[in-house]
Length: 124
Image (cartoon, rainbow, N blue to C red; front, side, top):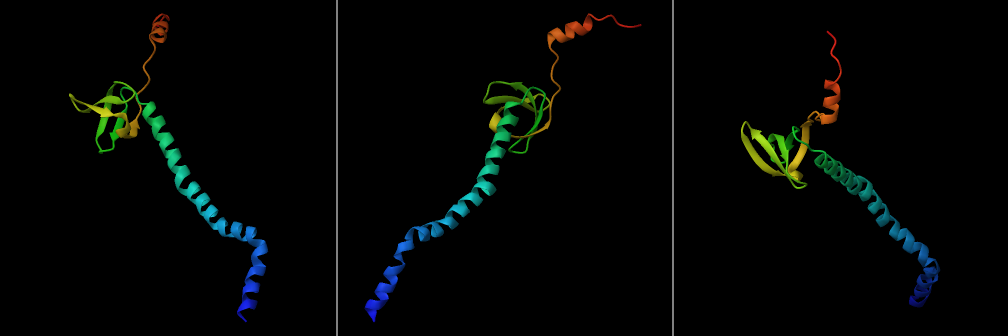
């Protein structure tokens, strides 16, 4: 009786490759779900933050990761900013600590554009 049970178990071994794929399918499905629900949105968020940091310029009102609202007074280099947190109080801040830009500063006019507008005759 024990021998017949052993033969019955061995007979099902021909389809072993398909059983392996079927057992592996849930793991692949879980990885795909994790990618689209966790990894991909996080990568998008990091890309947006890098773009936000790269676009900082003088006059922007920002919020730091500590919750301090400040105005960018000087862009020192690609790593540091000088911000004014109160009137006359300026501190150096890492760019990575900026979490939000509340308002963007108006772009400064080029000197050539300003000179061209001054040359126009004024009506009056």
